[in-house]
Amino acid sequence: MKKLNQRIYMVILTVLILIPVVLYAIIGKYLDSSTADKENRVMTEFPTLANTQLFEYPTLFDAYMEDNLPYKNYLVSLNSKIDYYIFNTSSSGDVIVGDNGWLFYTGHENNDEDPLADYEGSNLYSQEELETIASNMIEARDFLAASGKEFVITMVPNKSRVYSEYMPAACGEVSQDCRLNQVYQYLSENTDLTIVSPYSDIMAYKEAHPETQLYFKYDTHWNNFGAYVAAQSISRVWGFEMPDLDTVEQVYVDSDTYDLARMINLGDNLKEQAPIATAYSGHMAKVEILSDGMSFTGTVESGTADNRKLYIIGDSFSALLFPYLACHFNSSQSDMYYNYTYTSLENYDPDVVVFEVVERYLNNMLHFSIQNGVVY
Image 1: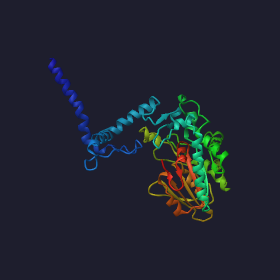
Image 2: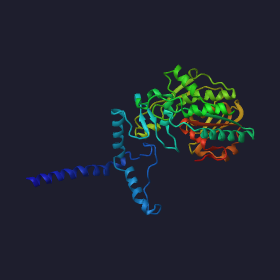
Image 3: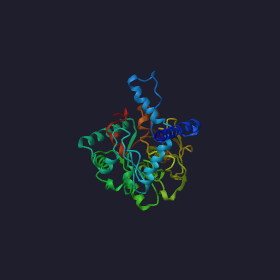
Image 4: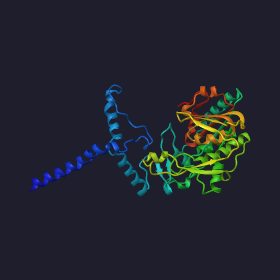
């Protein structure tokens, strides 16, 4: 009897093991097996001995198998939903869940960024570092001025600074003694650079219009409304006035997945409509995105805007900022740091150059030169 029970258990165990395998062989081709767009990272390709060192092969093969396990997307998604909806936690070490389901980025994906240290004010620059930042920016300004070009710097606050009320209680209060304010104050007091920090204008608009969201709930970036308020601040440098955001036409559209939602494998679940400000200028720019997604061109086809040419060097925050600044100039171009070359700037030959940097990337100012871009 004991042997019979053991055989029954073995048969049941075997069936349980085989059912998912057989089922996947039948329906696997109909299942969603792509994880690249769900986890916001590059998936491991199948290694071959032709292009892989022998000692690296086992590690790469193991990584490939982890990325391509049967049912992985569905199991990972289930785990992420349990974490987010039930325990109010994140399945990614680079994302934290705040109040009301807000997501905040705390990771270190690019260079030596540290958004949580920015929030706490625990990573202030030394005097030497501040002097280096000032020197780099002055050198860029003077180099451009030699050929008659204007140089404007603008610094963008992190989402966690603007919406600190949604940060987890464990993170404490947001510190105003931070790099963003430190760099702005130092450059303002010790140089004659043209520098714009839209932080105060963004916070003032948020306080006056609490119903209007300026940053995405499930993304690291500001939305079009946040970019619009920042564009108002920057535009005043050139004497351009933009109408108040609440007086212009506003539309809401369905959007793609958001980066933080993808990082916790919930890109298909956590969505919100994207707000867009329209009809804000008498000379709207036609914006074209180049194939690499990191460069933009803007043209006011009526030719009724400023004849100077605008060029923006920035991070991903510049993408939504670009159309609102481009409307002031008949011709505009934008390149992100990672795509910027001096040759591109030289060939375009702009009259006005804007250097945009978000708070968590302020270290780029330590490593930037107009001739070489950001070099770590």
